[in-house]
Image 1 (cartoon, rainbow, N blue to C red):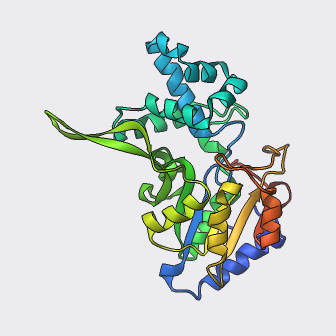
Image 2: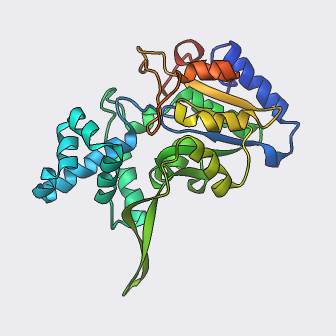
Image 3: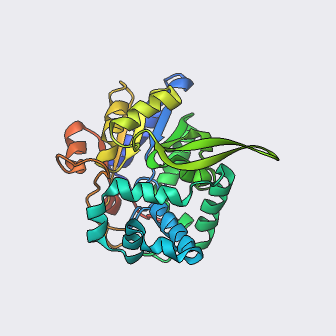
Length: 300
């Protein structure tokens, strides 16, 4: 198979190739790569995949108990009322969605995620969700592995949600996923002990500085390669780029309205001080144009 076949010749491909070649001079334990998920490894528009999963879960819950649909947060979600959602606020909506899965065991949650991924289709493209991964990024993952890198997904999404699909989609082990955590409760039953999900998040959403902090607390290794697409990835990209030589920060620019979506990536929990692409160019990151640098976007 050709090396990075979906990457067109140009500065972005050259930067990746040079970095990979230089990395071979490092001890294996220093070859650490971290990549964001939403908008970096798979499509995040018109809505996050995990959000679609939770809304589907909400619809199922309302079918079982219609009274749930009268709760303000759930009514706004069911109606797609953006004004009401904005008034309620992200934190209140997120906690309400967490409640939908409270009481589920880890295995039950993972099974429902896999069922969703197998059965549902992307609302904008009509393709199965597993086909909404970026083919060039799958090739980059393989190139990193071929150069002895340990690969970790560091995402603002739910840790368990991404763990449920990380091996099948990306070849990344579930324990190599760092994301936003939910609290669990230990229970004793007649047939043995059990863990169940609660409706509480553990700590803050894994965005911005939290990504770097969690890389240290959960992985204990400093990356020399990082890839992201929004201001929520900025600190992680800076941290990898400052690791010395060789190091590489890759920023995905969504500028292809025909084959994907054209939009300026923004963080969920923080305001951008400048467009992230401007930040990337100013700081010397490798900014990847979907339109110009990728000959294809999704698997064929």
